[in-house]
Length: 319
Ligand code: FES
Image (cartoon, rainbow, N blue to C red; front, side, top):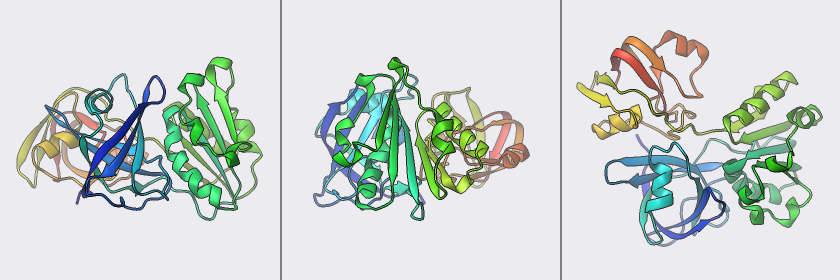
């Protein structure tokens, strides 16, 4: 079953960096929005003229202030339409549907220390987590890397308690975060969290592994935008319908447009909810998720339709 939606109204829009817009949303029914914890995201449903976009965005507002939600959206150069819709089409007073918040990037309760590493727009889930961390006793540090001062979003959201806990790294000043130095000297029981560009996430994961950090202490969030690709056809065996997947829509979006529901939480290749069995394949699956194991990819029996595609003469799915 797909997440239920809530109708919200956009109450403010602010350009906070040359690439990032900040949106405040309130429930059209008034009153409080559903509770969430730091690290949660919502799916925003955007009804464009030609198609519906459903994109995940981290909640950056305080989990203690439920009269509104706040999200930030980076304009993507290769957007399939979602970020352009929010940057160029919507205006204050417009209504959107959102799914209930889901947390796939929560803080580990047993941690003895938290290291938060953000790159660019990756700061957003940490802003909500800082609200929780400020109230607790567990030590924490935030390392925030951006291109330049004008690309450093939400610095004003960092409170006085962060004054000695935040390290900024400005690329244009040649300041780079030394992952080896940072992760080599942390006390036992430290958890590291990273959200940002793919290269940064890979560096953190690889460095932590090379120093023997347990996988359970390394957390990352990266919602992959579904990539564009060649068109292909798929047959849904249980629904008995054929679906044509166009280059700039995901397999999941095309299946939904054909009236077939697929469960989802993240729509970014992370949660595993959209896992679909492949019944027949004459060709190749193009996996773009972070969920399937290397072995599962090799067998060709599973696909995550939110981000993955196929290059096949025949593809039959158990839907
Ligand atoms: S919806 Fe989360 S992996 Fe596809």
